Amino acid sequence: MTSMLARVERPAWGNVLLCALLAMLLLGLGLWHASEGESYHPGGTRAWVAAGVAGTWLAFTAWVAMRRAAARRPLAVAGAAGEQVLVAFASQTGSAAQLAAQTAASLQQAGMRTQLIELGTLTHAALASCRRVLFVVSTTGEGDAPDSAAAFVTRLMSSPQALPALQYGLLALGDRDYEHFCGFGRQLEQWLQLSGATPWFDAVEVDNGDPAALRHWQHHLSLVSGAADMPDWERPDYQRWRLVERRLLNPHSKGGACFHLALQPLDGDLSWQAGDLVEIGPQHAPAMVERWLATAGLEGDRIVAQQGRALALREWLATSQWPTPGAARGLTPNKLVEALTPLPHREYSIASVPGDGSLHLLVRRMQREDGSLGLGSGWLTEHAAIGETIALRIRANPGFHAPPAEVPLILVGNGTGLAGLRALLKARIGNGYSRHWLLFGERQSACDFYHRDEILAWQQQGHIERLDLAWSRDGAGTIYVQDRLREAATALQAWVADGAAIYICGSLEGMAPGVDAVLREVLGEALVAELREQGRYRRDVY
Image (tube, rainbow, N blue to C red; front, side, top):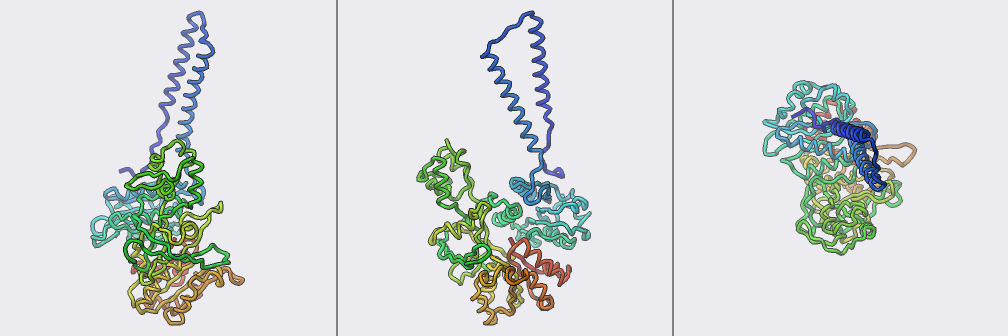
């Protein structure tokens, strides 16, 4: 395998040669006619036809040239013009290489420049010059690196390197039937952290090609690229749930409207663990579907049978990405449905435990630049009616499950990140444990203290030993949750010394790196790395 998977740029010698031959033919015909001693005019119609053919050929040649030139131009990077994301892979059987290629392609479609490279060819100089790298790696043998990565392991991973400016993402492939699950991926992440690199987002571990874990990787890709409509590589196997409750939690807030949602299954039982996530299959607003149908001149009642299902055309459109109405004109309903791509899923942290009798979510209503509502949040908080069927799949998230009961728990979050922390608190309090320290931040205490009564009751009952709150829009100064953590440095050291685990849930931008910086500042780099290795520092950030 070559060191880089990339399109080979071939000079357009064929076009050059064809142009030269045509020029020679034209010159020869001209000389031949001149030697005949007389000229012949073909007539106006034939001349115009000949000119049209030549013009068409020239236009086609120019279009091909422009396409090739456009293909050679680097794509603009979302959020940072000119920045390139390196996608490095280490593959033993080809799976990691394929997923790395899909990763690079998805980012390119989102407008980001990428370079795809085999890990074994990556040098320290190349790595140190990068700002962001995505690693896609498999594990072989007894937790070993793939053969193709041996040179990288020998040259670079024998000792920490200086990579303070590097942000990384990691997709680690493994099989839980083997003792050293994702062994090389975990070794690589530990080395990156010891080298001073910081996570762009949390590592994703994949058990035997688990599609749900791969969708979680895609979820991160869509967030960092800003491509909210990035299609799923594989559609989730949704179950049917019913929306039974929706309640606005923060009227008059300066931030976005935030809702408490409750859902119940139409098929099966309530079954999940605190820390798990849901994948939601969103839908377009019914009014948007009808407008599109009217513009395209199509009837929404027309029944179309595809993929073993017979649905009205408007139902197919509700859950799909659309072509432009103009592109759909002339297509039969069957051909249109064949060409549709399902809407990408949305992920949310579960905010309850099965004992609550329903699955709770905490969802902020998002708005696009044009004022329209976000796809997932708009569906859940506005367009779906109470009683509506929601396509939902529970995804296990063992990396954020509760620690053993005897372990004290420090929970840090902001905004809708309270959802995952609330579920953890419910599970542990329900089991009779109360050694909890909650640090929560939002905009205003008067509006944005979600589930205020419940949390304060837990504190009064002794289920929350310590509660620290940060309100960024109250008072003269701007206070964030990481500031509260820094102020409590002595208590933080004491809790960690007493065996506490630290769980973070909330914003990937701002809060998560800010909290991480405080932990390293207060506890030291070595202890933070040890906490990660012991599973006592866990994050669910987005």
